[in-house]
Image (cartoon, rainbow, N blue to C red; front, side):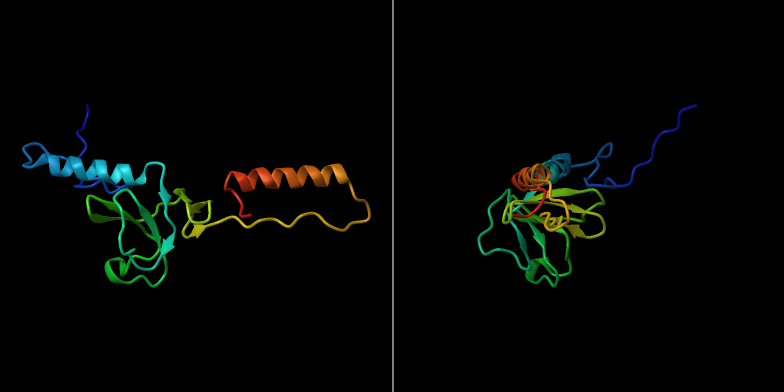
Length: 151
């Protein structure tokens, strides 16, 4: 016997609105869902800020800094995305990743937004293996270019 799933009014992870049979103005809910997907798919933020920019463009997003103000008050650590002249807010989920365009870094969320620290270059030691050190430097450069670690 198959049971029918009972849905809440929004999805659990991305907070997308759900449609219901006989619902009026379904296009509003569909358009909101598409705007939210557009904002979160391949997420890239302009940077981190505590208050909204003066002239945001649709399609831009920001990571909200601690102690936010104005329209972002009470939303530290969330994502603010500009869509159709409005702000959409997203609570980060564990495993979420974004590209911070301001510093070229990838960030991931695991309870807080994290940026990997750049490891120190090898130095010292009784025996110095130049080839191994050069390989480590090359690996770090590739990781920097990929935005995995800071320059």
